[in-house]
Amino acid sequence: MQRIFIIEDEAAIADTLLYALQHEGFDCHWLTLGSEAIIQQQKQPADLWILDIGLPDLNGFEVCKQLRRFSDVPVIFLTARDTEIDRVIGLEIGADDYVTKPFSPREVAARVKAILKRTLLSTKSVEKVATDNLFVVDNDRYIIYLHQQPLNLTRHEFNLLQQLISQPNRVFTREQLLDALGISVDAGYERNIDSHIKAIRAKIREIDNSVEAIRTHRGFGYSYEPSS
Ligand code: CA
Image (cartoon, rainbow, N blue to C red; front, side, top):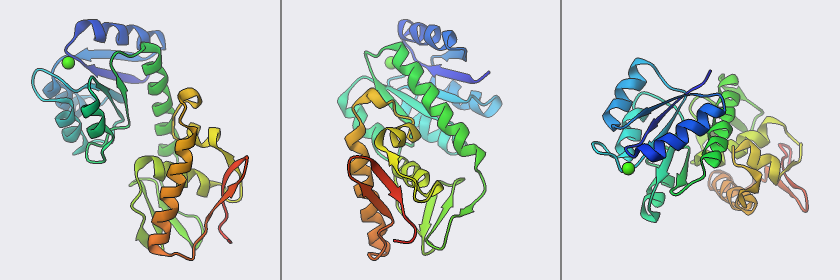
């Protein structure tokens, strides 16, 4: 059974989450202090953390940073304000996802399932994979190299490119790529795939502007074409 810890100082919020996640079959626990999270993860690691940002002791950002010093455990933030969202999606925090208050517990449960599924898939392919002469994917460190130079990818961009490279010449639809990112298809996020692809292409061009590895299939989606 997968174990989830919720750090939240408001009992009513924690209760609805506990109920929803236990209903989905997770072993779910609740703590109110950020400092307890660090100790807990060192003692008996959880499979995923749900962190509130406004906590009585450390704030959620600080908790996440401290967790990241020794653990890659997935983290979902509960945010209350727009200003917090900017920081959550900023790279320095290292969160996997966030939900804004007020939220539906079912939505949180769906995000949790998607992230755990993705984590399971990526830990299955832990060895370094030299896919061809072009890219080398390091699934342990979430780095993709082009000509031995690391591409400076965000987590979503890494997952996208990794997915495309994993099956050369296969056309992935935007829905399939969203699924690979662990984002539910009904989240209205499909066009964001296009902007992620655009960003990946720009980062590839920074290293070698003759590489046209990602092909657009109009009306379908994208594929990785190692020969083109
Ligand atoms: Ca709070």
